[in-house]
Every structure is written in structure tokens, then in C-alpha cells.
Image (spheres, rainbow, N blue to C red):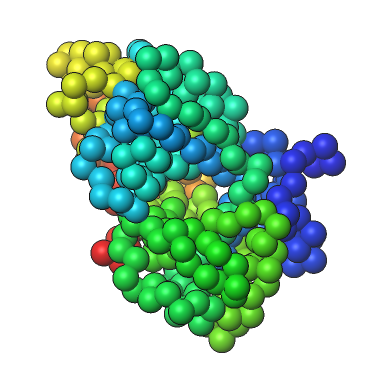
Length: 369
């Protein structure tokens, strides 16, 4: 199943570490090593390392780099300092989401965008299609870059053993472009996708295996574990961080997804602004809500949500939460039913199972500010 898929430079290391490989967005990647719950708990309590080299990276350079980014994204990049990072969305004209992304500002003429693996080609074409009238060059450098995510309360202690850079000075949603880790020059940021403190480490693909091995050695005393896509998903889900194709998509707007904070409707212009202004004025028709199962059964993506016999939406993500020890989920439903404590049913194998709407704040995030 994974024979013709793309492989990161760490593929052999994943196999040697007991990684169970699956197809993810055209990549052969580990879903787990030791086991999802052990890896999830390592990140929550100690430290875990993820290979995220499949993520996409695009450089935008030129005299009009800032105005172009402003045109492209819903958030406001004009507020950024150099080496600051911004979470944002790119929208279609109708308000549906092209992708969510991280925008790294190196200068007004140089931005670095981190995009989702499954959307790299689509996103790049979208950027090229929207560059008319802007003096910018847009380069997809995804194939040249490797990326590791080191996450957990002991991430800083682990990485600090390998560098002279004072990592405590890298603030949340900032980066340092010149960090020497074990003799390898890296870009290190502090954004995170798990609800825990931690770092993203970018370097050329040839050096990524050396970094992985050295970080694993440095983290031994802290109980470091390699973590796969399974734990990545349960961790981000508990922290209510959206995943493209689930809580956000081309048919779900940022306002429906509860991401209005990252949509600056007072900006002069961005692609999709008119549609989102109209949606806000008319009332957002659907909302993402959290829910907890009251009867046995694990809610899965795509399961229908109902009240009585009326289908009101569907599950976007659902799991047994390793941290909360409960079956919980996120669903997109008609806004008129989206009140806390509302009783709903999740159709698990077409049988209605009781659930109740709860706060989406399943887990208190523990980022370093």
C-alpha cells in the first residue's frame, strides 16, 4: 500500500524504530511506534518527537511580498515583527478554505509559509494564480526541507543540550533562523500543534537523520519517545486545534469553524472577504461544537449528528481521549442547536447513541508565552 508513496529522509529510521507505516496524503509515514496512548502520554508528560518533513514550505520574496501575503490570507501580517509567526487561513472567493498555514515573516520582502502536506500542489497553484499585479517570486521548496517537531514539557531541556542558543528567548509564535543544533544550522520556531510547549526544527533534508538521532539521545533521560500520526491527531484534537479536511475545508468557512479571531474583516481586502462579511451579517449557519458521549461508542469522522430524527450535522473528529479518559468529539451542526448542554445523538453504525454538547476546550493548553 505504501510502496509507491513519497518517503521522508527518516523512513528507514521509522522502520528500525518499529514504526507502523501508512499512506498519509501520498506519503509513507508512521501512524505509531510503541502505541498511540504511550506516545500521546509521552508528549503530555515528558517529550516526544515527530517527523513532519511531509509538511510543505513555500518562500515568497520580492518588493510586494507583504501586500501579496495580505491579499492571500485572512489574518493581518502587517502587525508582524521580523521573525514572528502568524496562524492564518487562505480562502476561496466563496469563503471556503483553501488551507490553514503558518506565515513566518523574515522581512517585509521575505515570507516563509508552512502548509499542509496534502495541499502543497493545490496551495502553490493558488498562490501563483493570485500573484498577478504583485512583484513577487513564489518558490515551493518543500522537497528540499526536513522538519521535526519536538513537543512536551521537557522539550526545551532536551533541545538545549544540543545548542548554545538560549532557547528560552524564543517566544511563542516566534522563530530564530540561525540555531546551531549538533553542528547543523536550523530554523527553530515555537508554534506547536499538540497543546504543549515545544519546537519546530527546519533544516535541509540531508541533515534531518543526524538531528533525529541526536535529539533521541539527548532526550533519553527525559523519557523521549518517537510519536506517530495517531498521537499527533489525538493531541491536536484534545487541544481543539483544527485539521484540514476535518474542522476546516473548502466547504467549511473560518467563521463556521470558530476561527473568526484569525479573520480580520477590517482589513482593506483579502480573497474571500466579501463572502465572509456577508456570512457574518446574515448569521453563521453552522458551528463546530464539542460533545461528550453519554452512551458507549466512539464517535468517528463522518458520523451523522441528530436531534430526535432530524440530522443536524456530522462529526469532524472523534476519539477516546487518552488524557480525559472519555469518548469525545467535534462536530459541525446547525447553529440553532449549538448551545452547551444540548442533548444530541451520534449515529454510530446507524444506531443513535446519546451525547451532550460541551465546551470545545477539552484540554487546557500549556504553551510557553
